[in-house]
Length: 361
Ligand code: SF4
Image (cartoon, rainbow, N blue to C red; front, side, top):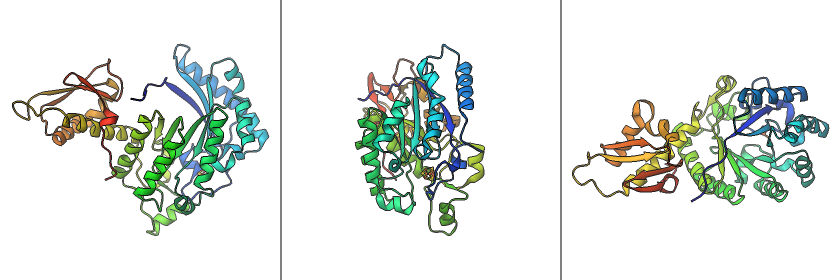
C-alpha cells in the first residue's frame, strides 16, 4: 500500500496579473479563477505577506512552508520580472523559514534553460497546466499545445530534479469516458509528485460561456464531476501522488462569474465522501452475512479525519451507507490510532482506497 501520510504543508499564494498570459484558452477567465483584482505583486508586497503569514502561524507550527506563484504563465513573464518575483522569496529560503517555492506554467513555455534558471532561483516544484492528454480536446479548447508538449515539459522538470505537479481539467468539450481514462493513465505515467483536479466550470466572459449559451456544450453535472474526480483521486493517491486540490476555490469573484458547471464550495470533501462511501461498501460487502438479522449491530472504525465525510449533514451519508449495504445496524466509530483511508472491521484493517470500486456512472 502507498504511503498516504505527507507532512502538513502551507503555501503562501501570489497571483499574477491576468495580463501575464498571452494565450486565450476557451475556458479561462483568470480574474475569476485566480484572485479578484490580481496584479503582479511587488517584491515588497511578497516579502511582507510572507512575514505576516509566518508570524500568524507562530514558530511552533511545524509545517512545511512554501511560497507559490499562480495564474497567468510565469515563464512567459519578462526575465527581469521573474527574477524580481523569485528574488523576493530568496531571504526566506536562505534562512529556512520557507522550505519550498512553486509556480505554475504552460508545458510549451518551459525549455531546459528555463527549468535550470528556475532551479537556480530556488524553485522546488513546477506545476504544469495539463487539462487533457487528448489532442482533439486540447484543440477544441484552444489550448495552443498538444499532449506531446506536456510529456516533454514533465520530463524536463523531473530530469532536473524538481517536483512535478499536474493541473487537470476533466469535463472539457469533446472529452469522452475513453479520452478521460487516457488522460488519467497518461498523467499517472508521468509520475508527478502531486496533482490538482479542477472539473471544468463555465465562467462569464469566456468563449466557453458563449458555446454553452448557444447550446453547443453542456458541462458535467455535479454528481458526475464528483464521481470522475473520485476516480482520479483514488488512482493518484494509490500511486503515491498527492492530490493537493479538487475544485476551484470558492471565492466571491468566482461565484459572481460562474455561469454553469459543477461548482461546490466544498467540492474536495464531496469527492472524499464519495470515495469513502464506495470503499466502505466494498469492505462491508466482504463481511460475512449477519448471524441473526440484517439489523444486527456492525461496527466499523475510521480515522477521525473522515468524520464529517462519512456521516454527512444530519448523518445523511451514514443513512445512505446503511441502505446501500443492507446493514441498518451499521455504526461508525472514530479511532485516532487508525491512518487516514483505512477502516477496521471485525478485527481486520482494510485500505478504503483499494476497496473502492469507482466507475463514472
Ligand atoms: S495558459 Fe493558463 S492562464 Fe493562459 S489563458 Fe490558458 S488557462 Fe489561462
